[in-house]
Image 1 (cartoon, rainbow over the protein chains, first blue to last red):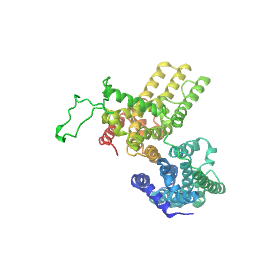
Image 2 (tube, one colour; image 1 turned 90 degrees about the vertical axis):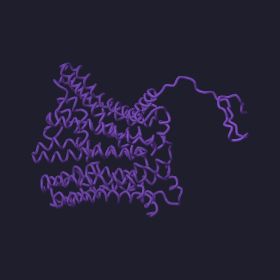
Image 3 (cartoon, rainbow over the protein chains, first blue to last red; image 1 turned 120 degrees about the vertical axis):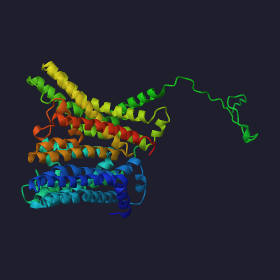
Length: 239
Length: 307
């Protein structure tokens, strides 16, 4: 199910040249902001939860998920070089699974690690805030990577649709319509984080069971469907 | 086949020996009018502007810009309908505030259309073809910049027009509304210039469209997310002075600051503490500096053609 060559090529495509720069810029910004906030206000659990929840989990994790998830397959389909990969005797679901593993790993490294560091800087993991948000970022990474990898196989405008989901659906509708929050990766991962922290700093709108079940269902279904999609992939011409 | 014309205008250089000859095979020269640089620039501008709304491109590429345009205008229509129906004394939203509220849509538009405008030229290596015409770097950059800025201005000004017409239909005070509408137009013009510049500079770096989209949206939303998070914390710490200075670090808060200081808007900063007039000058300078800087960077980018 895991093909090292495909993985190596995907890693190179994801982290090569300038892509790694934009992936690295966001975590650096988060850590700089955390350091600035710490210097500004001192250690404060509520402030730490605000920064990690508002900036790290709501903005940074989805964007990194979009870049890594769609970037794992999108450019190859876009420039047509995916046919060379598909022509090899490797099962299509294997390709998807391998690319998913890579996308998940990259998203985790670039979102969960800086979240944990930022949490340590902000309040030294007081009330388990840093650990809780790191767990949320880890869990969200898996779901986001699977979801956006699927988008990458469905449409050529995967990045735009991914961003529409991440920014408009989760951020805008999530704040206006409370029902939209039930269908949001962010809230599902927060449900897991709430269990970890146990305090009332990290709260979610969905229960732990709902969150976990939906996370698993979405990840598995998206991966399966992406594999099916890749089996019948048609290479369209340029617009 | 070759029609030999020994007395043609081009004399064959005799040094190559007796065997060397140049055949004039009788192609006609072009002697019609040459439309020149200004015409080429104008064509590039109108092509790019139409392209920003998907006109002259496939149906698929019309969907997104048109959809964003509709999403941008529908809230204005609803507000107007409510204002007319309830005979309100004032519109529910200021003209200057509208673009700030809808910034996610504007950001998505810049992110999707900026790379569309320049990345594909880089990717399919058509830039050298443009420069084989009588246009120069400055023409290309100006045409593309002006086209994206105009497209953005249409996107942001259309809902204001809807609000204005609606306000007049609802018999709100004419001079009051006209003043607000004018201020709103100035503010969205500045916003269009700033966003178009940022979007083009980022997307001109990469030939990959998808990557350009992600980079533009990341710069716009991450900077806003960072600034508003830190501002909220500064507000909690009741250091109001810091709030207005922090606004300098993201495009949309820059516009917010300028219109709060000079265009009679109420700030969207936490607590409504916008910059004072003195700080407003800094904001305005920052906006103009950014616009000029983006133009300079684009000129630098296209000084050497190709990748």
